[in-house]
Image 1 (tube, helix red, strand yellow):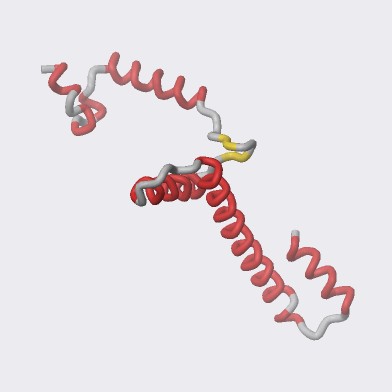
Image 2 (tube, rainbow, N blue to C red; image 1 turned 45 degrees about the vertical axis):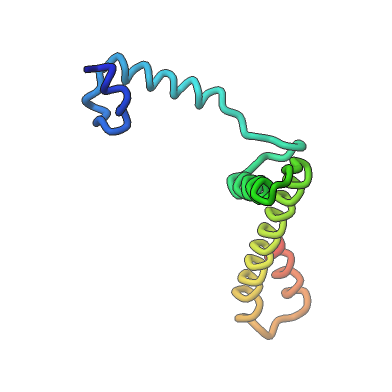
Length: 121
């Protein structure tokens, strides 16, 4: 019965598994997490959104009966991440400028430059 249970281990409550089995699973998990390193491609760390974009490009190429080009798919993934990061940075800058400058007008040029410099940081 125990071997049969292992085929459906994801459906069995964790506490009902044998203590030795649980201990072995936990030790294995620790070893895996200890040895994990971020995925890198061309010296850049692959983020979750980049990996998703890369997978989408591969699927699109395969579905179009093409051959996925790793380099170009990676370039597109990096570019998509850069565009997203740029949009987020502009939104943050605008929010900071709106909060610190627009609500405190009028202000002299030096104050505005200081606010601008702080918003860019």
